[in-house]
Image (cartoon, rainbow, N blue to C red; front, side, top):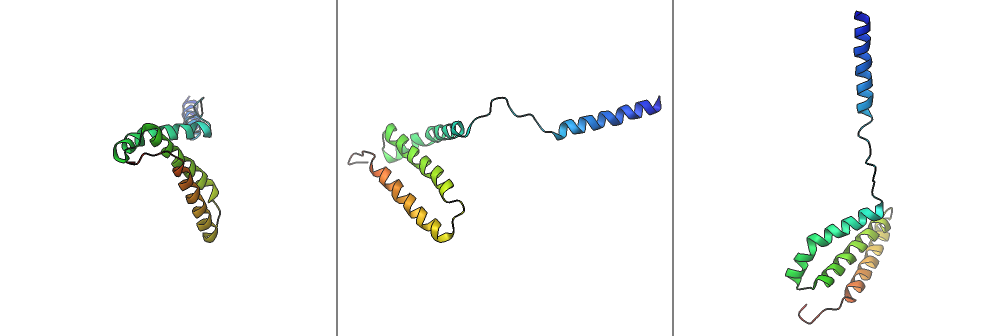
Amino acid sequence: MKKLLILSLISGALISTSTLAQGPSKPATQQTTAEQQANMLQQAKEKQVPMLVEKAGLTTAQAERVIEINFEVRQGAATALQGLNEADRAAKLAEIKAAKEKKYSEIPLTAEQ
């Protein structure tokens, strides 16, 4: 009887530690990368649009476009700059910066803005 009790305690301990070692199960609804990026962009807009409207005097549509441009450039730069040496990285950064400035210039602004 003692042996049976000890064996059941040991087996129970082994089962519980192996179950806990597997970690929590993943949620049934995982977001894709595109959904995650869309959520990140939406959160950025919610946080930054009021500040841009207030401090820079932009309209809501203009502020949203600025945030979208920044987000696109950041996402593109993250992938484009991976694995480049310093000289290539500097050239690519200059190219990315020029493209960003061109996109900014396409946003219609008033004289005060």
